[in-house]
Amino acid sequence: MLDSIYIGATGLTSFSEGLSNISNNVANLNTPGFKGSQLEFLDLFYRHQYSGTMSSRGSGVETGATVLDFSDGEFRQNGNDLNAAIDGNGFFVLRKDGEIYYTRAGQFEIDEDGFLIASTDGARVAGLQGNALADISVAGKRSNPPKATQLLNFANTLSTTSSTFDVQDITVFDSLGGEHTLTLKLTNDSANTPGRWTFELKENGNTLSSGEIKYSGDGSPIAGWESHSFSYAPGSGAQPTQLTLDFSDSTYFSAAASTLKVAKQDGYAAGFLSGVALDSEGKLVLSYSNGQTLKDDRLALAWFDNLAALQSQGGNRYTVYGETSRILGQPGTNGMGKLQTGGIELSNVDLAKEFSELILLQRGYQASSQVITTANEMIQQLGEIRGRR
Image (cartoon, rainbow, N blue to C red):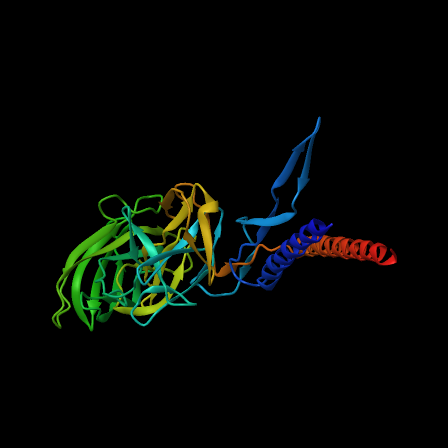
């Protein structure tokens, strides 16, 4: 009967460890990227006897490995453009103090040195350059150089009823990012040549260039007469620029008034970094004050053919502990999931399941304690038998 007490004690010990595992799962219910675990139970060794028939007697229970559940957690928006969750396979790759860690918690920020880091402990987020891991940084990209205007695209209509028309306040930029205001003065010359308009491009009253546009009978520009290019030299140290006036999107027909306007110009002033975000492909999107954007470095993701080789290290981190092959890729490639940005992946702990497991553990603990109590009472009864003699 003494062995029954020891067997019952193994049940108490094992169910206590099971309770600890459930407690850890429930405590991390709101931990971003947390993966719940299941504790395995194993029966202990058996004693075998043979006396005509084979009989076996077990020695109790012990706890085995803790198996992690790597299923996806729910995605929740939080409005942070540098937060991301992986929809499918993959782990973010972090590097700190010469160690490599893997995580599903995509809570990132830019540090004072310009590196993309995990907001919890400052570990640097790795990107992939070729086949090698590399830090992701905005250093050296905090400003966007100016671009001189090379194209002015005009759209809408020149009316047959207009004798003249001016397009005023045309903004262009020089090679240094300087802003200039031009005026396009157009004159209807259809009385001499049907569908012909002449123009002068002026700055501060001075003519920069002149030319003509010709329209066909259906009101569309005639090929070869729909654009005009010239060398624009704004001075002030800026380099001369080949500037093209493009009227291919304009029309010429009878209308109440002319509505020709600048639809697009391709120059801009210098800009400074105003925002950083991640897109669904894991690219760092840099936004500048001049309206320009730049898609830069791309996050690396890792996956493993044996997820059981990953070991939790706390802080939403995993390291490789067992035998496995690592696969590196980028979001949406090599079987990796795409990113959901502007939010985080929540814990995948199922509270209903954990409470159900909790009830089973409690019943198992009660039953094991009852076995110990019963064995103890039987030993006491045996002692009383001896006392009555």
